[in-house]
Length: 264
Ligand SMILES: C[S@@+](CC[C@H](N)C(=O)[O-])C[C@H]1O[C@@H](n2cnc3c(N)ncnc32)[C@H](O)[C@@H]1O
Image (cartoon, rainbow, N blue to C red; front, top):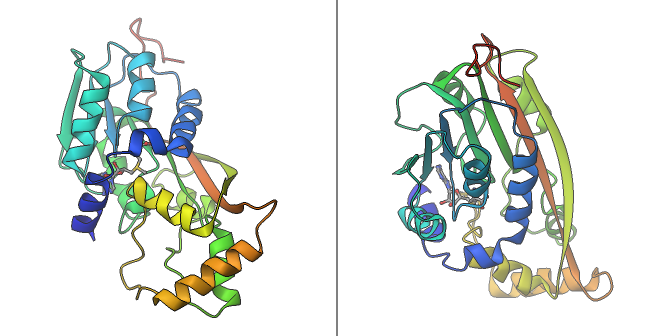
């Protein structure tokens, strides 16, 4: 699965121009990042750098380790952001990042839905944070592509969608009780056709099905796309992205500002 992910995202050379929803989500997450004084930052699954750009603007002097599973994505990120004295890049599996602990902020926008065991990854990320440090993330929730799921059910076809954790599941999996805050957003995007929706996913590398999935035959796929188009509103096929955002804090002393008082 990880090899397929590297291949899919590695080939997504139109990601930066096509992934408009991901750009918007990164902006929303960035606007809610906590107040921290010169935090040591680890970014997971940076892609072409939508969130990285905000992190650099917000904390130009903070050390930032920007990482992704797919090396071509890191290259695109570097090409887009240019050199910054405090910015380093690394190929890392965000699910088990092979780095020393000590981060004040771990940020991950639209990547954890690709983890094999997303909830289990939280314990490892928790361990990498300093006391008072924060994990800030955006990920896809279980209602994502509900229109696709409903069409598959209506036609008795299997769907290729993962069973994603709910906001409550994420909160419960965080090792520090009471320090996990989530909020959710539904974004419905119009597509000229069902096929255009699938092609859009492929263009950004986000088209991989769940591992055990047996692809539909050409005839089944045609029936499914026709069904979606029959349900179309105003001539467009709508697909909903259910986005879950999280700000999860590690208990302990809050990060200290330069004057020794808690930042923020
Ligand atoms: C949908 S893109 C999001 C990229 C970027 N954060 C953004 O918001 O545009 C998902 C990114 O996660 C990376 N990715 C997938 N699985 C990963 C993993 N296990 N660890 C780290 N990165 C991963 C992909 O290579 C891709 O760059």
